Length: 596
Image (cartoon, rainbow, N blue to C red; front, side, top):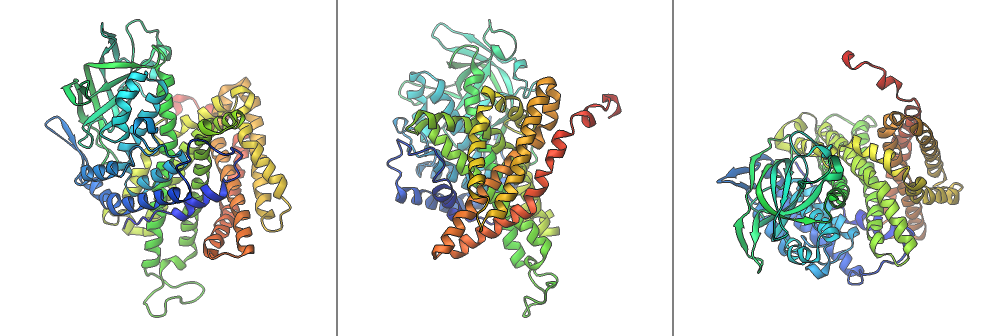
C-alpha cells in the first residue's frame, strides 16, 4: 500500500530552524512570503498531493501512456489533476511575478517539489521540466521570447521539455547531428531526431515548448559548435492563440522499467521553426542552466520516493503480524506481534528515516543558497551561495537518488513477499526510483563533475563554502556535553574528507584516472559529512528545545534518536571509504579489457 502524508513539520524544521543561521543573511524580494503565507503553502500543497496525485500513482503505472492519432495520451485522471495543479497556481510558484508567477523562494518551491515527487513522480515530471525550461529561457532568451513564452509556461497552459539526447550519443553531446538552418526572418528550421525526451508529447498542456540542441551550418565540431533553439509544437499567433502544427512529432514511446505515467518520447523535428536562445554555438551554457536546475530536482525525486517508501514501510510494519518480540510478547491479544518489534525491521526503517531526514536537511540548505545566490543583500553572500550550489549540485543529484533507490528496496524488503508483487505498490517505487540515478547525467558523471570540475575550480573556492561552516561548528561544539560524542564522529569523518581531498588533488594533477577512480567514493563521503553536520546541528537545536520545555517534545526527541542512529550506524562505514579513495586506480584499471 502506497502511504504518504507530507512531512510538513520536518520540512519547516530544516528550513525555519536548522538553517536559520546559514550565513546568507536576509534575502530581498520575498516580502510577500511571511510566516503565515509560508506555512499555508506546504499545507495546501500537501492536501493536493495526498488527495489528488497519490491516488493516481498506481493508475499511471498500470495504464502508462499511449499514442492515439499522433498524440500522446496520459493515464486516466492525469489531465484533470494537471488542470487542478495549474488552477492552484503551483505551476508558476517560483516563477517571476513579471511573467505571471508567484515569485516564491526556491526553499518553498523545493518543499512542494518533494511532495509531488513523493505522491506521484510520473506526474511531477511534467511541471518539473517546464520549470527547468523557464530557468533557461529567463537566463538566456531575448526579452521578446521571454515576454511571449514565459507567462504561458508559468500558468501551465504551455509546458516545456529539454531535447538533448540522440540515438548515437548520450552524454557526449559533441557528437549530435540535429541541424538548424537560418531563415530570412531570424528564425531557424530545425531538423533531427531525439530520444529519451521526458514529456516530449502529452495531452496536459495545449502547447509544448521544446528547447533543442542543434548545429548551425557553419558550426565548429564538438561541443563548441552547439546552439540552443526554442521550438514549439504549435506555432503561436501574435495574440498567443495556437496556429499551425510545427512538424514536431512523437514517433514512439519508450517502454520503460518504471515512471510509466511519464511520456518518454522519441521525437522528430522536420524543418520545425525555432528561435535561437542565447548566442550561436554557446547553447550548452544555456542548456546547463536548465540541467543544473533539473539535477537538483532529480535529487529531490530520490528524496521524494524515499519518503513514500519509508511511510509505506512503517504502515506495513505496524499492521503486519508475524512472530513474537524477542524481549517478550507485545501484542498479547493477537496471534503474533507486529513486525515493527523486530530489530532488523527497525534497522531498515531507521535507515530509511535517517536517509530522508538527512537529505531533506541538505535540500533545505541548498535551496536557501539558491535563493541567496540571487536575493542576498551582500555581494559576498551571493558569491558564497553560488559557490555552495555549484559544489553541492552533483552531490544532491547523486547521493539523494542513490539513497532513495536504497530506501525503495528496503521498503520491498520490509514487505517481504508482499513487496515483490504489484498489488502492494512498493515494487513500483523501486522501479520508479531507478531512473533517477541515470538521467540528467548518471551518478558516475556527477562524481566526475565533482572531482574534475567543482573541486579544482578557482583553487578550491567552492569547497571552502562547505568546509568553513563545518569546521567552525566542530570547533565550537566538540566539547558540548550533550552532542560532543556526535560532533566527535563528525570530526573523524570530516578529517577523512579533508585527507581524501588532498589525496585527490595531488594524485589527480599527475594522473586524472586516479581522481576518477576515487570520484564515486569521494562524493558519498562528502555527502555523508554534510548529513552529519546537519544531524549534529539538529541535535543541538533539539536538545536546547527540550531543555527549555516544549509541547513538541516527541518531535525533538525523535530528532535526537534519529541522529544517534545516523552517527552510530550509518556514518562510521562511510568514513572508512578513505581507504578505498587512497587505494588508487590499479585494482580497477590493470585488468585488460579482453579479460572482462
